[in-house]
Image (cartoon, rainbow, N blue to C red; front, side):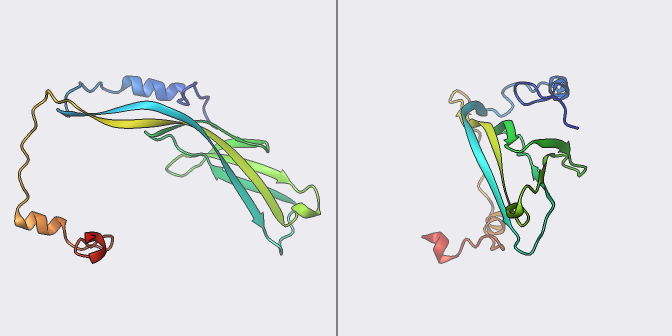
Length: 166
């Protein structure tokens, strides 16, 4: 079962783990640092509609993974208009899953279903901060062999293509 969450969406156990991590002194990145600040709160409505003309259901079970917490977003709430239960998946990611049981109430529900999940999140803005007081470190040019290796054609990118050179 899911643990109780604090106001920030982090469990008490997670807060203890974060507090136990070693503190990294400032200045290791020299001239650059990353500043993260809450930017804005957003809401997203995910809708699912299933139509299966040849299916005759007596009930529906819908399973949706809750969005993850990321450095750029903190999920504050996930709800469904239909009563849902939160479980933890047994896979390696241990994601929270929203499980919804929807009974068929009439003939229109036997082969079609509509469902919505409302997600509220706080987005974070991230900015690179440059400390102009710190001296720039010299960076060596690539050797011709290193440059050739870095600019080689791959399945994803061809630096020699006309389209890329425009």
